[in-house]
Image (cartoon, rainbow, N blue to C red):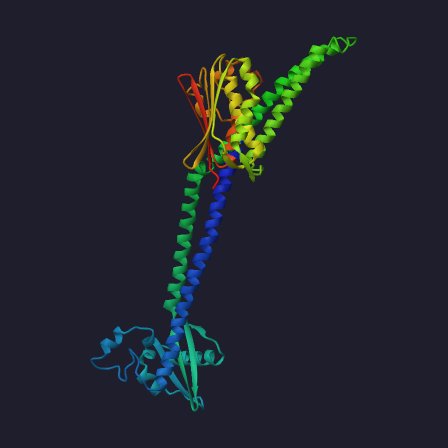
Length: 429
């Protein structure tokens, strides 16, 4: 699969994941809200039914229920459309006789129904069958009853309007859901480039790493293959006669092994597989490194100055910190000209421990500074140095990984022929 198609697939997967996640959350949220609203509506209706029956039992007047629907009070009666005033109640005696007189006088809203007899019969049959709802002429009703010795009170409520509003709210929920999902999908797509930028960079870095590693490995392999060709061209030659070719092959094998070891070490650091439980005397580590490179400095007549504060302790990995100090000091030796100056400092600064390695020389080009900690990067200065022939461009990348793995940061500044690398590590509490 081409990288471009892979990134497009990641974008689509990101959008699908966002849409699916938000869809599930909205479905759950809207379902719960609608269910609560629906249940509240049913509760209010059923509560009105039971309240009307209870009040009627004790002959208490209800809002909107008048003993006489005629007269000046009828206007007030029409204006009162509360749940209670819309409840219809009638009484049925023990022998099955419906008290129509009481039904029409006390609760005149029943007069609005054309099929009064059918309404009464359906209410009685549904209620006696322990059914709470029934439909008649395309409308929906809630019912209830209460027995009182010689008679039974029945109530019903036309909840068609409430039911319609409930399902209308469900429709609006669906519309809001579709709009929200469309908006989330669009926003996720627009933001996908920004969100997946680290992934894109990671893919690019991975491709660059493979390309650069292949290039670095290709050179020693090519040299070894050429040496083998020379040896094979003279099958009767002795080991002594082929010594220079064998030495060259040995050197390339060491070079290849060094590259592989560095790549594995860098991979371990970036995957945080290095333990940081040692109490490391960084002062001793720094001084030991300085002593180990004195011979190299002597060969180039370099003036190595050290200002190392004693007793500087950090928590970390001793081997990695030794590698860090060696990388920076060795890098300074490589790029310091004959009779130049190298200055190594280790000191405490507020809440940080600072390791500083400064050297004189050509310096680093300004355009190279942002990239010097990248793997396999070699700037103009590196290409002009004969000492860089054995360099892979992994040292500073490893120094950065070691520093960041220890919770610190590394900086580089180069101007007027002076280059300074500074490592900032947090002090041990």
